[in-house]
Image (cartoon, rainbow, N blue to C red; front, side, top):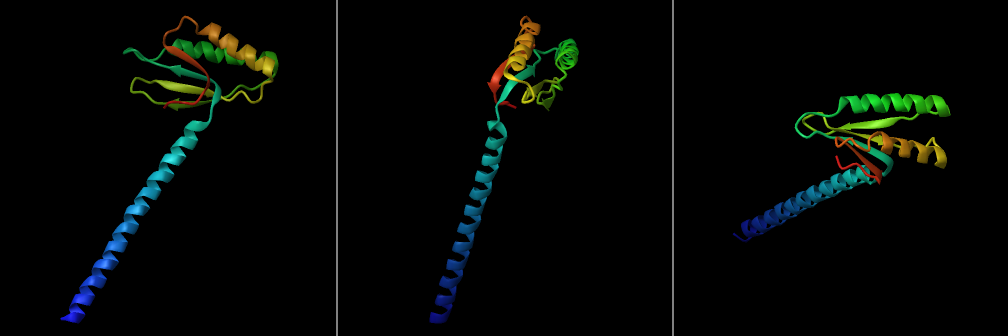
Amino acid sequence: MKNILMLLISTLMIFGTACKSNKDAGKSNEVEKNESMNEKNIQKYPLLLSFISIGTGVDYKAKEMLDVYIGEFNKGYNKEISFETRQWGREGEYDLLFNLDNLDAEQKEKFISDIRNLFSSNELVKIKLDSSPEH
């Protein structure tokens, strides 16, 4: 009887320790996942354009205007402006993330100023400066 009781207590202690380890492991994975998501969103971009929709889809002509302007800028300054695209909406919404590391301060200022002027009256293109993507 004493041996059975000791065996039962030992078994409970082993299972209790195993369950605690699994719970801690789950927390560790959750923390790692949250940290990697935060690292992804920590990067700030000097220029972030959000092409949004208000029930009618994004403004595709605005993107065409942007492409034309970038082409002209690239030719005029002998530079290559590139961006990362992040799709996020059900109606085609997306963000364009501009790094602009290959531009000097004056070129960067001109590029951003021209983009602001290009889309100043467009409610479907949101401009954010020195921002991290939300999506």
